[in-house]
Amino acid sequence: MLDHSRQSESDFQRAHFKAFLGEIAALIARRPNELLSFDAVRRSLKIYGQNYRGIYPVPLAQIVGTATLRYHDFNRAFLPTQTYTKMRWRRVDEAYYEDKELPPVQLYKIGEVYFVRDGHHRVSVAHEQGRDFIDAEVIEVKTRVPLSPDLTAADLEIVGEYSEFIEKTRIDKLRPAHAIQFSEPGGYARLLEQIAVHRYFLGEERQQAVTWEDAVTSWYDQLYHPLVHFIRAQNILADFPRRTETDLYLWIMDHHYFLNQNNNEMELEQAALDFAQNFSQRLDKKLVRAVRHAVGDFLGNRDWLPLVGSQTNAVNLTRDEEANE
Image 1 (tube, helix red, strand yellow):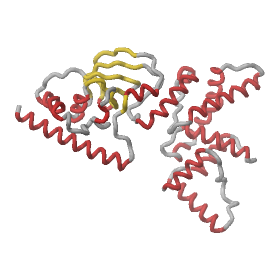
Image 2 (cartoon, helix red, strand yellow):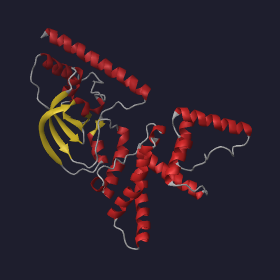
Image 3 (tube, one colour):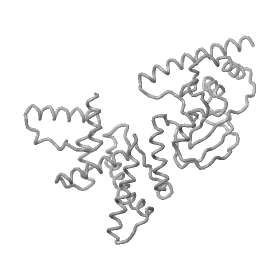
Image 4 (cartoon, helix red, strand yellow):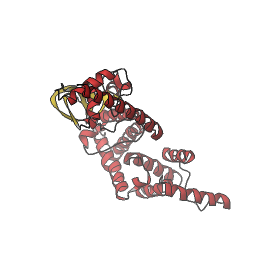
């Protein structure tokens, strides 16, 4: 017993120190390190009830948050960030060494992620013991929005907007393989505007009223999917690290509109290639672009340079990123 007590003290000190190092690493990398709040996630989503799923092994890597107020007691890896519950943590740790059977933890499940209702210390100790799974009693909360273990608190605004987009378009039912995803907030509302405009022109073309459902599927089949398919075929996403195909779709649509408004008529595919050429966020291409601009400024004549004056959000974003580098 004494050896187990000493071992549990050593285990806690190691886990607590690792939590300290993890916090420093997260600050340096500017990445989130906190547990997600189940209540915050639930407020962001449309919930359609819940079902009891029974007891089964759950991957520890998919437990990302808490349904209680304990999200400050542990970090994202469920390492203890405080010492006032040390004795409770150590008792659970000692039970592992003594091969005592612990009750299953209690979890909520949303999509592919889990939130602890009861058993935070058991989850924390299981992590420190190097376990991959933990027995859990699971209640699944139903929602149309898929959640993955890389979800962060910063993503919740986007998740909430996506939930509303799904609710209004039923795209998950109409086109289950849609994969519409933004890297930052604000995009889904603009897609809804596009669908509304597409519905109007579709009605003008057909000379009859068009249902919202028909407008959604027509917009997806005639506009969104063909452009995304072209983006994939040309590997344009490689020029925009950390962005998504849907980000590019919206930026390219804006770029296409701007070109045509300024008497530079192009097909949508040409506009996509032009956008990638002139606004690539890859470091090597940004350096080449900066050199070309510098040469143009030096010569006092930039007429030979490609178009660089877009009013799109994507261009403004690119310039902001360049200014910060």
